[in-house]
Image (tube, rainbow, N blue to C red; front, side):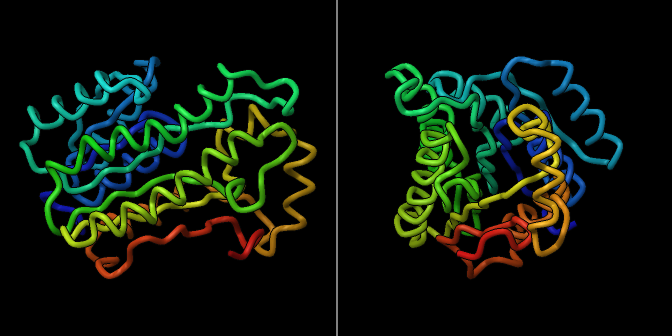
Amino acid sequence: MRLKGKVAIVTGGARDLGRAVSVKLASEGAKVVVNYFDKLEEAEKTEALIKEVGGECIIVKGDMTKAADVKNLFDEGRKAYGDRINILVNVVGGIVGRKTITEQDEDWYNFLMDVNMKSCWLCTREVVPYMTEGGSIINFSSLAARDGGGPGASLYATSKGAVMTFTRSMAKELGPKGIRVNALAPGTIATSFHDRFNTPENRERMKGVYPLRREGDADDVADLVAFFAADDSDYITGTNVDINGGMFFS
């Protein structure tokens, strides 16, 4: 129960990596504010899983690319659990689709940057007044930010690279307040993300390339988030930690 008495907000916390993170933090004692975008049934399933591990949560709908929705998320969290927020996990993001440079237009550019970078910026800006010494912000970048991404993923990779840089900037700015800011850079994790945007053949082929010879799973990532959320990591900030089975060494 490393997080007993702490309050955590998890954006995109209702499914896949976000769900695993939400359940893990709750199992460690945190009271979790679970954000979801549109699928209430997914959020309710996450809520049920949190209750199964003896945890406590509320679920809040909202588009994390919209400042008003972000404010509402934090307002609802504060109504439920008080004004002090100890942990923010910015999971929201995604590749959305694949387009080459000549297929991309301004709307596509803005959408990718909004969902991956603007959401992170809005939530970080909102949490700072309610986070005190010992607080932890954990962002989600990607292996794509390291290697440029796969075919048609240039803007996804670029936006996740921006998250890496933003993480370092916030670590410098918020460090004097005692707030740690770190990011994770997952490789291939077995979630619906790769079910949608990768092929079974490529995923199987790549298993032979990874030094650990397997894809990661959501619990691998959630365990690392819990480490950064807890006091175990109280002298670590500004890092972008690779979690990819050895596929890429930073």
